[in-house]
Length: 217
Image 1 (cartoon, rainbow, N blue to C red):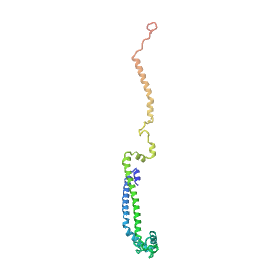
Image 2: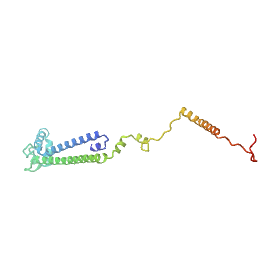
Image 3: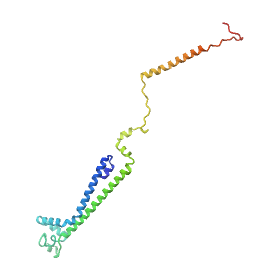
């Protein structure tokens, strides 16, 4: 549960998972407390269970007596499976079964408490690890969150130059083509006019004959 919250992208999911983990730990602590009090309540619970089985199924009590080598609940005269129980076992000073049953309950309670302790410790360590990753690692660099939230197809379509727009060619229009076509003609006309004006302002030199005289008109 804690690991799922840590790896989640949504902060709401992280908080909800952490709260559920804390509630689970509190419930396990209460269960551990109840299990630790099992041997204390064993006497009344075992007594009522023994009396109920004594009234309904004495054969089951006989199996318990033969397994532990005991007779009756507190002693051989306290609700035995049969009156000749001590004779069948072969010991007139046989003890009652309560002591053995209480030891069994104590052993099972202790074993359950150990397993619950291991589970609680693992959950606490998971929460601490998740808190460290969120505050120390993922909070500093959230690139993994963006990459995880972005679909793979969108990441492949992103430009490689860091998102900078490349210059695009504008489509040529009919007006632009017409202006471009007329531009050289207007430039030529202007140059011709300049040449004509320059010729008019500077008269040409009078030609001479080879003998040094002026050319005849």
